[in-house]
Amino acid sequence: MPEITFLEAINSALKEEMRKDPNVFILGEDVGIFGGCFGVTQGLLDEFGPERVLDTPITETAIIGASVGAAAAGLRPVPEIMFMDFLGVCLDEVFNQAAKMRYMFGGKAKIPMTIRTACGAGLGAAAQHSQSLEAWIAHIPGLKVVMPSTPADAKGLLISSIRDDNPVVFIEHKMMYGISGSVPEGEYSIPLGKADIKREGKDATVVATAMMVHKALAAAETLAEEGIEIEVVDPRCLQPLDKETILHSVEKTGRLVVIHEAVKIGGVGGEIAAMVVEEGFDYLDAPIKRIGAPFTPIPFASNLENAYLPGEEDIVAAVKSLV
Image 1 (cartoon, helix red, strand yellow):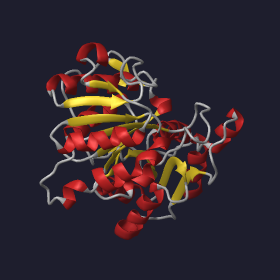
Image 2 (cartoon, one colour):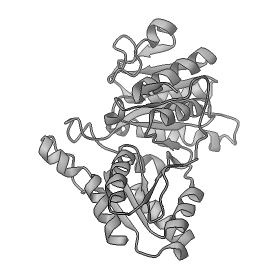
Image 3 (spheres, helix red, strand yellow):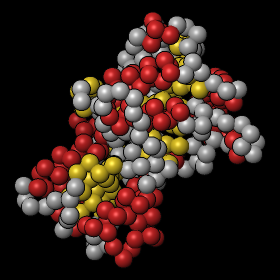
Image 4 (cartoon, one colour):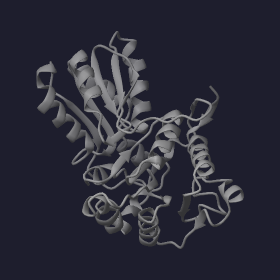
């Protein structure tokens, strides 16, 4: 399998779906001539033209509002919200319109739209351009929420998202765009709602999302040197959540650590932990540990930002406290 970057995998998925289905189109700020804020949509304007790669005004409300209308009319829009932080500008269109229309119309309306957006800290983009707000989205019935961690997952899950007849929020961590990985050649997709075990282990389960998957895998190497083998589970989708894979892993290991980059309070880690307590309490041999960012805006200064972010050492310490 060829090695490509996370960015290239997303670009490839967009190209393949646009070639396959003329109803798929892209819209957002700087997605056309500029090729996207992070370069993800480079080359699409040249191939598909301005009618299918639309540069929009700087108005998230219009981007998502137009996408909802287009989806209801039978198209498959892929709007880009440049930074996840800006979803706050178009919350009504996302939470009250896209998420609700299929239900409120008794299934007569489909809303096949995929909102691509970038989350995460690490670039020194400060408090208004660095947040991980997936818990907001996952709380709303009617929305599917995807957070890939590898190029192969990014491509396969994005293809499934675009083909889905429901609104999907596809969250890309900014620090992963340059990460390389093996991606299958030819057409393939990964079903939404199916977790992946990134590393097998027997002593503790670590459930991690997005960039934290890579930190969990690094922690696994450190712990392995001391004879502790952790199992790293990547949910890949927060809605729908693959409870079965998580519970099966906890049943095997008896211990659970949940880590995400978002602030710990109100994060999806709390939901995962509660689910395991409710549905798999007898599997646990130790208390569940949650790791998240402190409850504070994200600092701009690099030393403070580094201190803010959960890291490999946090995972190592949490696992050691349980084993």
